Length: 152
Ligand code: ZN
Picture 1 (cartoon, rainbow, N blue to C red):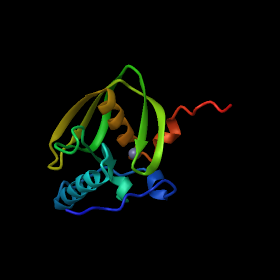
Picture 2 (cartoon, rainbow, N blue to C red):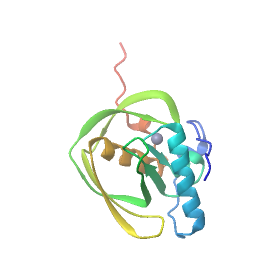
Picture 3 (cartoon, rainbow, N blue to C red):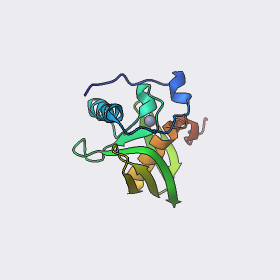
Picture 4 (cartoon, rainbow, N blue to C red):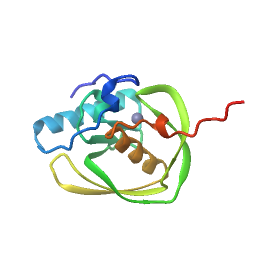
């Protein structure tokens, strides 16, 4: 377990498309544990592998202040419903908070670190978080989608 460096906006890695995980091996477990450690240290809600420089389709998230963690490998949004606009931030874009429209409910299919299929159902903040993290896997940052304040 180790804390990894979080890549910041401007780094090419954050704009790259991540590859699907094909080997559910020890190195994947180490990656996920390191992502969880890094997320705890950064006091964030979610972290995607490209944010620590690893172009693999993996994200972790926590919604109870770091007591329990969601880990998702090769996540795919299979259902999205409704709309919700809320401010988002990102560990790779410090001190920026902007409003983004996301689905209100999502269903995500993924795998755990052992290669077992999992289904994640999320509403509201959690749904936004899953969408935000999955966007990272395609090189998309929330500021690409944010509703910019009108300039006077
Ligand atoms: Zn982010």
